[in-house]
Amino acid sequence: MLVAPLLPARVESLFKWLFLFDTLAVTVVQWKIGNAGEGFYIAYFLAVLLSAASRSLAMAFVGAIVASLLYTWMTLAGGTGLTFLSMDFTIRLALFYVVSLFVGYMAEETAVARRIRSLMESRYRSLLEESGVGMLLLDEKRNVMEANRRTEELLGASVRSRLGDPLERALEGRMAAELSALLDRLDRASDFVEEIVVGEGDGAKILEVKSECHRADGRNYLQVFLRDVTHQRQIERHRMKMERLASMGRLTAGIAHELNNPLTSVLGYADLLRKKIYAGDGTALAEKIHTEAKRTARIVHQFVAFASEAPIEKKTTSINALCAKVAETWSGELRSSSVELTTALAEGLPEALVDPDRITGVLMNLIENGRDSIERTGKPGRIRLETTRREGGLRITVGDTGAGIPEELRDRLFEPFLTTKRAMRDTGMGLSVCFGIVHEHGGDITFESREGVGTSIHVDLPADAPHPRSEAKE
Image 1 (cartoon, one colour):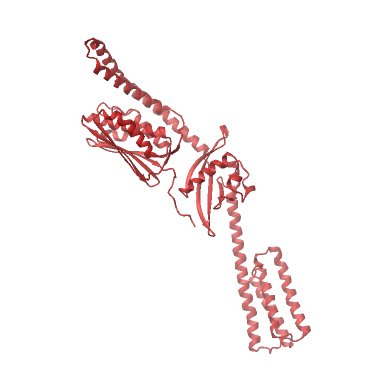
Image 2 (cartoon, rainbow, N blue to C red; image 1 turned 45 degrees about the horizontal axis):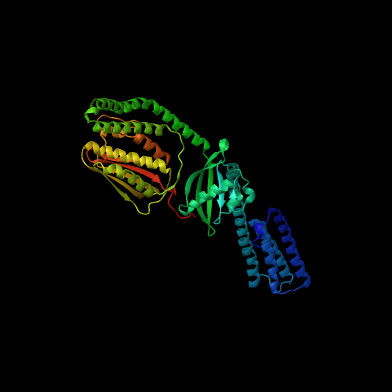
């Protein structure tokens, strides 16, 4: 009888009529056959239980009253074999009310809980459908358990018609492969936020994909949220472009100053070389011309890198291997100078999703700045290239024992074409470019410096898995 409250409302009225019919039928049968035995009163209990199917405590109580009145009449008529107001009669009559109140209360509470649950589900589905965020619910085997209308709009696929199917089947083609590859990252992180590109050409959309793991009914579920951030990213790119263009105006004076100094030196040394070449004393001057020309070329290259709008091309990269390659590249050039380059690469360092060419350029620039800083001291020095683990990512540190950064320059260290005649002569566009590249990778660049002691530049990058592994949420 306890399943009755789960039946449709249309069936409730049927149970009410069945209760009346059942109670009267029991009474008529017992009156016709006379004394049918003391156990026949159980039929009245069944009638009382049937009345509880109305999901109403009041109806259950009415059922108990009707059953008790009929049972009393049958007792007085001698149809039950009991004496009126005897102990057995009184107990049975009381049981009618106890059972009706208990079962009626439980049925009513169940009905209320069911209505509340139905209302909450209705509101949840309404919010889900009207939300501007797509939602996918996947089980442990990545079968699609639930999806809203926004998901179909964002992915361009009829996902809701494929509920129960594997994700790869529900999302056919390139989109399925990209999203599946993204979810494979759960081997290293259960909660993550990343972006993927859907579509091609003018119709391409940038989707922010966020996932959360939940556990229910002894099973793990993955809830995936999809948000269209195309317009937001376009605004950000436009803002960055405007900032770059604004910087260009400030750079003009710096460009002229930075290029004028080495070119003046080149012209001066060339003039001296022309006068002394016949005396066989032009080797040192030729070397200086070569050095200053390289410096000029480097400044121009850094300016081009700053102004470039070429997109970065990220791929999973071993930062330790990248650092080792950079150190090997510099070892030959530093061998002839008074600068020693050492490395300290952390074991088990996570891989990072970066553009290896751009990060290599950042490290090359930082080491070059360190070398120049040491040479300004006129003493031998050391550069240390180090990698360490950090929560959610990794850190690359380039430290030197050079002259350090003057106090008055530290607040403007990452401005384009920062220059001073006293120090930092070769910084030029370098640190500004490094700052932009690192931030394009979702990282950060900071420094520590003491004049006369040295400088350490820290490059923090997120690991390939954006967040560390966490337990599933209940």
